[in-house]
Image (cartoon, rainbow, N blue to C red; front, top):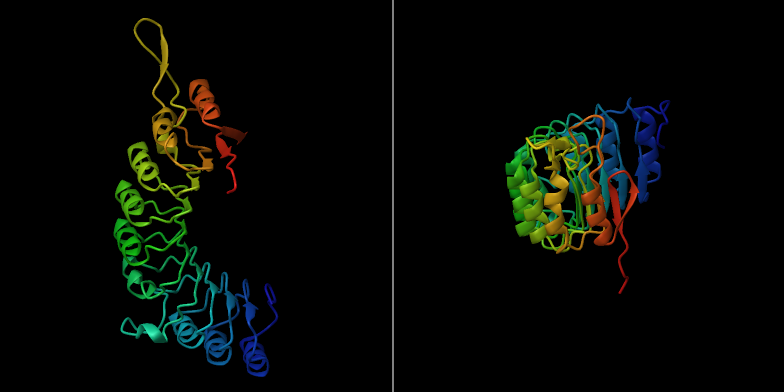
Length: 294
């Protein structure tokens, strides 16, 4: 039902009451819907396995709480851009584990700008969660990352784009606690440093995909610096990453727009070293390494 702008709350209520065995429902971009629809979904669709609700601006925690309370078979849930949410997770914090929807594997909270570090209390009960997206949840800090890595160490995929408050402290927590992490997206996170990334790559040996798009502070190409004798050298962050990459299992590395100098100046020494390590440059500073499938 995605983009069906003409459907009202009353229409959704009638639908879920008459088709109460639905397993998949997508109400994304239906901006007109309110908690009347959300609560009805949670009350009637107890067989629901996949739910997508993107940019449903009027939906609040009243809807999400009912969905998590009653939809025990939910495996995938998207609340992208539901800006009124302040927490996401099953029931009250005291909900017994056997009553929580532990089937949930994927949770997308991109752009839920009302979430704060305290939302971990509810998320911690999702013991089967493998993929979590909190991109553009601007209030989240290092505390959120430290807590979520402590309570959900089984995460395989973590997306945290635009979390501009997180620092290397978050990278350290990820490297120590998420021992099975496969992919990490920290694009546009402007407080991370090359030192922190080196620690991440050295500690998180299962990491295969790392996205750092537009982390300009990393300054991977470095620009050219001329010393007093007229010799040109570079001090780019890319060269500092190489040593950690030698010991990592990384197969995908996005360093696009991770430079500070204009016009863009390519660091050929760094690029040649990447090639020697087996990385192909699919486009400028987007590196892919072929891996053998065992």
